[in-house]
Length: 339
Image (tube, rainbow, N blue to C red; front, side, top):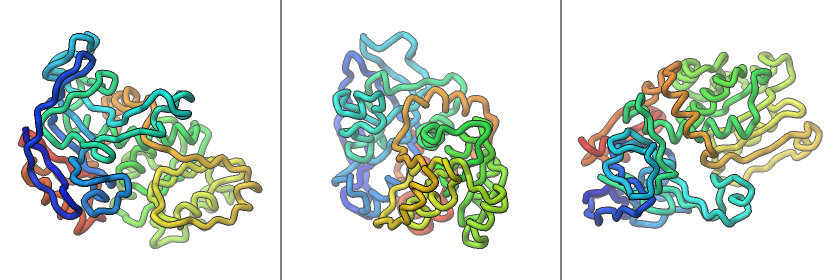
């Protein structure tokens, strides 16, 4: 069976791997589309400390059930179009015992700490499989990254009375924007790319700020009467945007970090205390896949416009090359495994 492997940074190749063995509680998924995300690009560039080589990437997955074990529930039918939860959980660590397996201490995400789904077929436990009779394979491949943003909005306890600032309008940021707008909040989107800000408006942002052209603190002050935002969600991963989230949050506000800063971040910690901020990390997604699938099925937002380009399976290396050469022009790349 063919798969795309990254044997070392900067190189991808087609390799042969064994066919998956189907366990009694597993579904066999024929892969149709795999989305590439920033973690895959970091794997390609050799910048992810969580990845060892060789590695098969791919955790944003859509496919169809082609077989299932005897213990798989009847609700999951052969032929169903599905997306996959790419995470593992141990059920023993403090996070799992607290009912938050999304941040399991020993999580292994497909394509990161373990081989992913950029291959022809995978066998996976039925609890990680979510079906839709409505969505296309393209739409289902968007469900996982949108879920990460949706979870961040849940972590920030976003509600209809809030003004929410999203720093970063990439795929994850758009998921947070869509979720916050769906919850009825007023959403302000910030980025350095006017195209991404325009996309954010399509996903529910009421205002947009190009922080490369405008003073973001001044503009947020104007939009909030000087109070700041109730919730600031950071979806970029830069020291300056980590600090901005704290600066721009209102007193008694909430700050949610999705991005990983690649360098140490220095703060004036007085703001933590004087504002009595709730400062939270947001990792992966918790119990939101059915909700995100429902949001996609409503088709109230143009989700498929997020897809920049689709590459056939044997051109996956070109996809990484093109993306790495000009990342600013990419929102979401898909690999068509069957093409």
